[in-house]
Length: 284
Figure 1 (tube, rainbow, N blue to C red):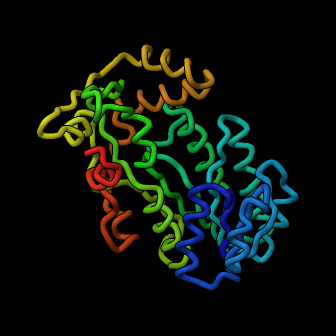
Figure 2 (cartoon, one colour):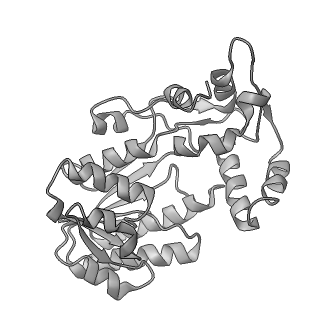
């Protein structure tokens, strides 16, 4: 059996939908803190079990009979996130899981600008030390978040962001989900670490040019990160604003500049490109 933790989230649900096309529903387990949020999956024949990252006993029970588990990283940050991931890894060992897949980030490091990459670094170390067979997907930034980063640039003609000339290998979340489903249902991924990104990396200057039209050009303006964070805290809690500001620092230092062919190989087709994504949104 294959289990997906955090199954009520976007990536978990999408991965399960792709898995349904590759294997029988009764061999899939959707683990969620609130099973009611995945009732639609149960109606498709998927086994639904309650499991809470903060409750080790529930995790052990939810992983009973599971061969492979996808640990989708927790939405909390810092020590609590690592503690929750530790709970899942320990539960997997106790339940007899043979192979654990994990959603990480590019360039995990104890000194990363992007705070989640610090948590991912610690979790990857835990996996290395666990004795479990693992596969790590270092997923690049989602194309899905790009509209929030560029705002009304297509209309105003100004794209404000503190990314310098740094580039990002943006990837669509559903492409990641499809690749995960492929890896979960095939062999040859044992103890592998995959950089999951588009074949091409883009700077915000590149994005501004992609947004430009014949009758209106879009200018990229590299603003100070302090000004960016100060604007964010007007709309977001300070800790969240700091994470976004740290992400911008990471972009500027090219931490997300990881063009790679692994995703395309797993998919068996080209991933959705930034250009086509912008056209889908009618932004370019």
